[in-house]
Image (cartoon, rainbow, N blue to C red; front, side):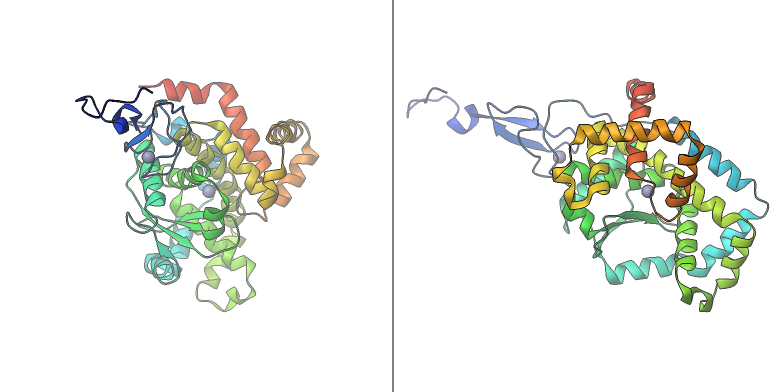
Length: 329
Ligand SMILES: [Zn+2]
Ligand SMILES: [Zn+2]
């Protein structure tokens, strides 16, 4: 870059050597070096990698545009159980909205545009891309890499501290977008009921709590197992929602790799991990025995195997359905 003469009326060095890149995610203007290339720098506001690639914000996205067929089928089976909605209404009345809110306001950090502003910006990006009102979001001290969405009237998102510490900015966007996907796909009520049932079934003290009777009834009616089977499959729809926000399948893949491998993920070969996903899916489709064991083991986890999830996302991309949605006006 030629130096300007001291008396020159030409623009100053700082202008000739930098230029402005508008963040594709949040719209913030960022000054970057003249020799900047895509993904060389991160946005000052949302901290996501800067790039001149476009970022699609959907208008009029409908849940049926991306819902996984296994989610739709499991929901149909759940809704076919007589009395399901009134039983779940009774269950949700057990805790109610205020108990959920109070417990997070008291125990977790509320994310706002002043508190952890880059996390709040990522939440706003996910909501704007999918077309969802911005919900309250909290970060809670918890060593398990996880996140969830709950609520009765107003949904809230909770990120565990380990998740925020472990994932990079794009992967954090993927997880927040997955949670916003639960809101967009209208999963929140049933998902909250599923968490309550898991909570009650996993603790021996549950028998002493008010509401224990309704949990027993829900188990005896077959609602609990149908609800939990649906909840696992609902995750597959929300991984698709996360892809619709990150718009990079490998961000979802690497997030799953960290969920599967924990801190060991830095030593894992990503391509081999993808191969393992494809291999798992092949066996899962082909062998009833594999499917049986996968379902048995899966029923004890809040989210299905990361390997299964990455295989499902790869398959959705390869089917062309993702590209069709991205091309839609
Ligand atoms: Zn940004
Ligand atoms: Zn989820």
